[in-house]
Length: 446
Image (cartoon, rainbow, N blue to C red):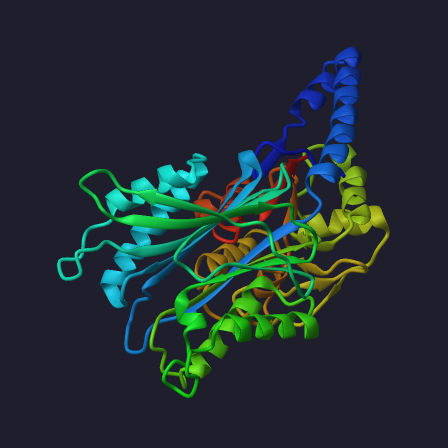
């Protein structure tokens, strides 16, 4: 693999040292750097093979209580690249509406932030108990939570629950039962409240799924023809049947089908907030985005070769970049009809999935990604920016190869800053992909 990694979610390898060594005819330094690079890539390949055997796809879906504009359940997730961890939290606030949302937001935020710091179950329970305001009517402060802590580096999953339906773990379409431990947390002398916690840990495998939800899911249908509500057993059978019939279903799609079935149990007038989160362990999907010509024209062939041998989806963004790759690989480029009046038309090249213009198209890609609602069906048009968005969102690991030669066509003070500097565009694209969509992005500058 031609990309360097792996201290953060975004990985940058600076080739300037090697260029400077070559320029100054310091062949000893250049040879040392090359040896270090080769050894580094070898170690990286071994460590990646051992440590990262799967991708953790996270998705959720929710529907508000009937008549409410805001959901009383809160779902949060975060990728922690420096520790190679993924955290997910689902909290259900007491009641529904604004008050429930405040309780759930506070609980979920505390749970996420202190889980990042590796707080144990008792410490976390104590912090949440002290932080939640006490209801003036019921004299209790109440919000449930489920915390999923996935360490990809250590290949372990830890789950901590308080009063949510027990998390379902599927290995393929079969139920996997880890050993659950019960922990009772009591408040201080003045505080008589008690939290009965459950926790477990296990080693995940490819095709495992973790399904967790608020009690609105398992209690759906209560009073609407289901005497005891949907119930855990019927809920489990429903999930297993979906996974059996559509084994490659995404985390978000599975969560959506579960929530919509629960809503149908309530005759589409939910009596509680309905939220489901899913974590899916699977083989990673990869893509490469090449944009901009290399700083040194002598690197054109290497630049094109990296794209050629890449195992995954391939995107070229930029007219000059397209010309270089077509020339180096001996391929022809044909233009397609314009599908977006605001952008130049895309092109076709053998074995390349998408070929587009550069800075204008990437600017629109960033705009579209920033304005996507994560809890709604994402509909894309036929334009080149829309197609890039769709491909990137269907990918887990995105490698960006950036040429650093200044394109004179865009070096114009009259143009907006955001489309003048390619590096700035890539930084913005990386930010939205990693922070909003939890993608793993690696960058190499040439």
